[in-house]
Amino acid sequence: MRFVWTILAAAALVAVAGGHASVQPALALHHISEITEVMSGFDGDPNVQFVEIEQLAIYQDAVTNTRLTAFNADGSLAGVLLDPIGGNVSIFGDKWIMGTTAFEAASGISADFTFPPGILPAAGMVCWGAPDVFAPLPGTWDASDPNNYVDCVSYGGAGFTGTNPMSPDPASSGAGDDTLSLTRSTSSTAKSTSPWRNSDDSTDFKLAVPSPTNDAGEVGSLIAGQPPPSPSPSPSPSPAPGPLPVGGVSLDEGLRGLPSASTNWIAAWLVASVLGALLVTASMVAGAVVVARRSSGG
Image (cartoon, rainbow, N blue to C red; front, side):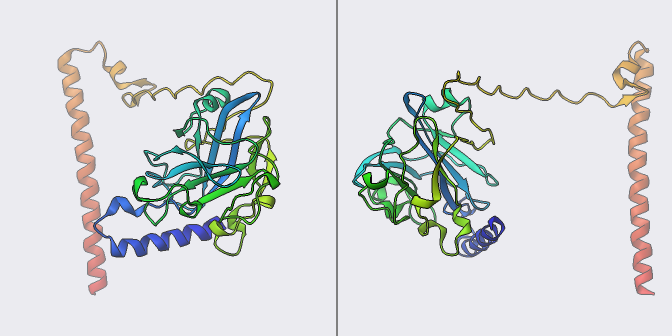
């Protein structure tokens, strides 16, 4: 099904490009995405919180100016946690993470965007996104209206008495249980109608072992009772490629110790050989073109 949504996204981009051909950076979107995992509290630390987003198609990277917002159990605004998100994610990405600094320390991975703790653990709702095709400036739209977001996840069973326009019923559990996270078990792409307005949190979300994944593809480890994993080390830069090997040794090693005049001549010979090979190749291509033209004309 992801392939289908990718095709639809490409078609949408083509349509938008037709009307905004001069605004190239705006061609990326963010609406074909959904919340896939929420957690508030882990292993006794209420500040370990994260929200994972999954892109259901390519070019869903333009998340700048979107918001992450928490709602109370009665559906009223609890607080805007990210206002706004100040950057984009990968064009060909899969999942990305918004999380607290406590989440980063506990999971061993970096969140793509960080926010202060504010997700209610027992009952409430989390919404992410922005209205319109291209996210408008946050000050121009109402953060307290769930209809303005791409996706909202409500939880807490009967404890949630608010309204979620994305789902008729909330998930039966809270936003995790201090060990497990609230995880989407049924993707919206499996549904036959618009995925953003056709979720049922009561059946689509279950408690599961946390598997937070950031934009770099790193999966965090959250196992209660175990020490936090060491942060992933930054990859070492690849060494610059050395000279081409000659007879099992590098060219500079092979020339080392020869008189400078000899090395100059050898270097000149190598350059001339390369240029000669290029000229021969160009001549062969030109000859083939001439033959092909004559054959088609005759």
